[in-house]
Length: 395
Image (cartoon, rainbow, N blue to C red; front, top):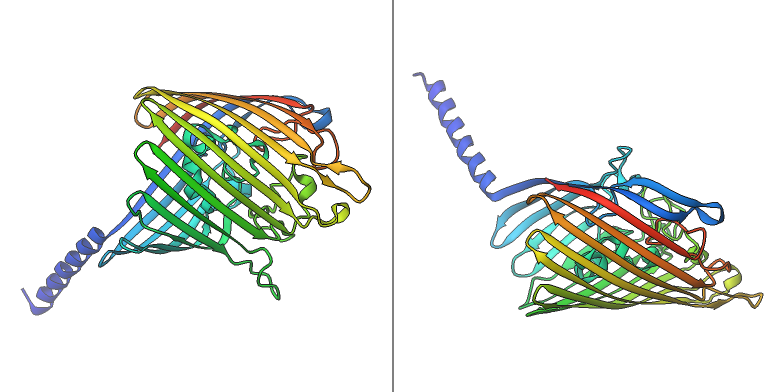
């Protein structure tokens, strides 16, 4: 064998060794989930609306998505991490989250086994990380279990763009985190910016989580910026009569605390949250709209392949006085939700859920309050019934 041949073989062997080492230190995972259901809605579409039947793949136990996540070991307990996750609408092939390509989350950062993680990109807020898995719509059910309009974002209706997030490691059951969103508005460094903080403590059968979030100018005229207009289509989450009258708010805040307690096969859940839309414009002349929400729920694990859940939610809105003397937003909502899930295999299950809601009082628009389960749309009257039957598969 000539010298060139020996050199080539040596180089190939070296490259093969290098490739093996690199593979051992890096990992990329492709994953996904399909959650498709047929939905019956008793009445929707405002005053002229009626019954509605449709297919839905975005608002189940875990909305349909696909994604990639990676972890590269840099040594000494330090890792480079990333996640790219896209919501998908099975029924028209479009992206979910208002058509945003990686609308669920997309970020990159560093994670230290000892000091925690620092990540940058479009991310969930601290309500998700420290309250989500303890909330009714996370611990025991779907977004149907969330408060009307998902006012506190406990069903993850919005994500945070331009976010810098720190998450601590676990300290004997205690963990915390903080996130700041850079507004990116020329000449105004605080417009469209916001922050959230959270903490969680787990001890035995008890779990307690809390979070606080504040955003300045949460609604933006620029699509993809601002908290309520975070998606690429620019549609606002303040789109129904429950809170659409508060789109002029220049400040938004949420304070929430939640606890769960396990008793044998039963897991009990409760929470309290306060939501405020402050510095309202127009005829509301700087007023603040306030909501208080309390919920209770339970999940019963019948066996390793079947569970049942039930939840109750009560939301009350405190009125705001307009310049003409009219009080708007004095509204009340009662909601009861049920879910039953049956596993067919480790990756496939079927479930059915139902929610009933009744509203009273005056909405944010000054009209009589109407029902609005999650954000499925205003009812044609003060009550609404929703049923969803689902097939779900993970991969």
